[in-house]
Image 1 (cartoon, helix red, strand yellow):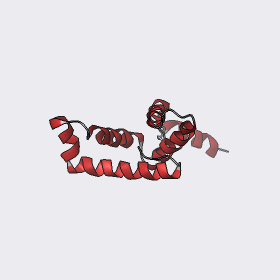
Image 2: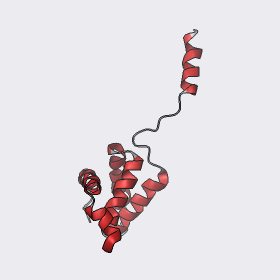
Image 3: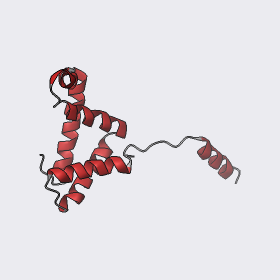
Length: 114
């Protein structure tokens, strides 16, 4: 009986740990809306794109997702600004990792890559 109060006290004193797939709703919605837009706004992609971001969330923490998806998106920038994202070896590795995770998620959720 004395163990229960001790467990409760311990659980309250321990900071809440973020779950690996704890993406904020706004981040998930941004991904889904962008994905749907790439597929002509078809309603069926609401579910398919939600499936993709859920799988991405299972594969990486949100902070890594933001960093890698931004790096991938910014590789298309022209000039020196884009060169930072195109030429740095660590950024290339991060972007390639994200591309692989996203491609696997797209395949599993039946979303054609665009």
